Length: 194
Length: 444
Image (tube, rainbow over all chains, first blue to last red):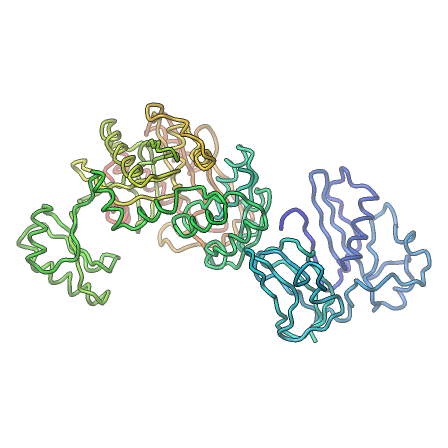
């Protein structure tokens, strides 16, 4: 879908910079909300383009200085903080206690990167997490599904199609928004193959 | 009309977006996976990937197209040309979903879609069709019908094509032997000995008439396009007007085309294709119930935006022109630039490393490609249409030769050398070309 491009990388990049291609209305607050968004969604790479500016953010594996916890234990269960070139280091403010690890609930475990797969939409339609309004979702983060279990509903032309798991896996991340349109090939779930 | 979904790709999708944008209508591009970097996807207001690379998985996938309409909230669909543009069941599906199909009604498409049914309807309207028969029962049957039609005649395999089971018969004496050999060849090639006979036109010219109709019964024609330069039934160069038509013949053919349209309550753009023989008799061949690739030449000589007119008709407006308003001024030529080897005609997909198009007064380029674009192997090989317009044929030809020299396409092969060869040929200048000319005269 056009207008916002989210890039996901299964192996964290080593690159340690923000590339500001144009910076018209880009400001610190907007940058902060981008980085928060990335953290929540478990992204390692993010590009955004608007009329005023373009920006690209890449997570780094090794951030010198800011979080000593990372230096001593590189295989942490969380995505490292992004580094903003030159102007500021927001993470100092957000992680005042160096020994407090950031929340891990929405981060993909780095060690399992090789077993991670993205389940994509097989056709264009509307994505629903549950069988109906008020009903509980088919899967949540952490759910373990076996072959044939329903993952979600894709509605196309008023027909509700249950999308089933084709292999045993654990749901790591739900990538599409409930009740929103998805296109062919759009990422729906990030899963760990079991 | 608020939002149109374009059920197509490449240059025609871009063409439709341009007119829609000028009319303030939002655009939705749909695309296959490999077409995500297509220019029309970038230009549209919204885009949706609808399926895999094979046309049947995407551009011919009606369910995916309708689902895309659903999620985008499009209230209109423009089918472009090719793909589903002449499939009546697609037009009816769109209509049944309460969406406006920018084109004729399904019923008109059905009636004119089949060659056989079209011939019947058309001859009832008094429009000449190429005289012909049904399946021949015997040599005697063939002989009596051939005498009625008048020699020369062409014996053709009912179930065939590609020239097999075809025999030109120039006199009664030749008929028996030709009939027997056509029949056995047809049986061997297609498994059926059914043959029929048709008037044979030597050196036929392909002249088509552009028509435009609204839903209130108003029909006008916008003159002709000369499309005799073909190879394997694919048009290579088109122009308007044709040097073989005078105003009287133009109006007669135009009237005939309008009669065909009226007989099926036609709506929107359509093109009636005719064969013109050396005596300037014209015969109806078929009607294309959609916009055509070569529509730009008509746009240049009439000054009318044909895609916009499609939108107006679809929005329920009356035709903005009377027949007397339509005048052909100047001369336009279109060259179809394809990604193919200019000598072997082998397709040449791949990445376009460098691209510079011609420009200047009277030069129009309709193209969906750009530098760095990779031409996919899944669809037709047309890269661009180069269209030139001048005060007369001499000027537009000189302009086209100049423009073709300016065009730079690197990384893939194109048929630009073929276009130059055609335009430089004395037969092109004198107009002594016909539908088989490229194959029989130029490439020999």
